[in-house]
Image 1 (tube, rainbow, N blue to C red):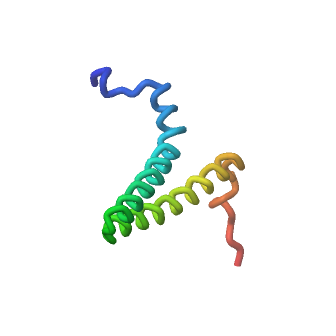
Image 2: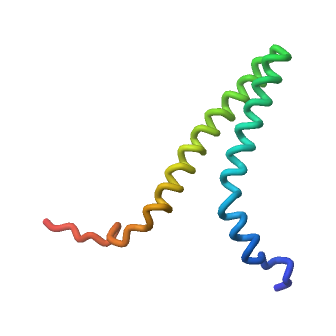
Image 3: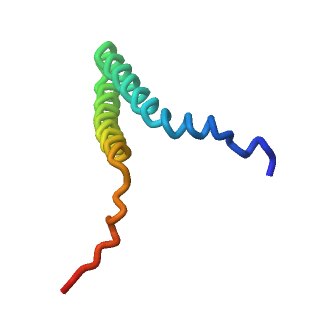
Length: 86
């Protein structure tokens, strides 16, 4: 395996910590751009793409908030290991 295929630790950490928020912001910016283009050109299709991106942005933001709140709480060790009694 060559060294070009191995990702350095600092790059992996940077991607794991900042990729998701960067993609969420990109989605927000693209949605605003498409909505503005739709209103300026009077084209309903561009506005529809912008609305779809806003829906995706809200969904991704909610997922990111849940992910961050679960990371702060820490993993539950007892989840999935509970015995069910009859």
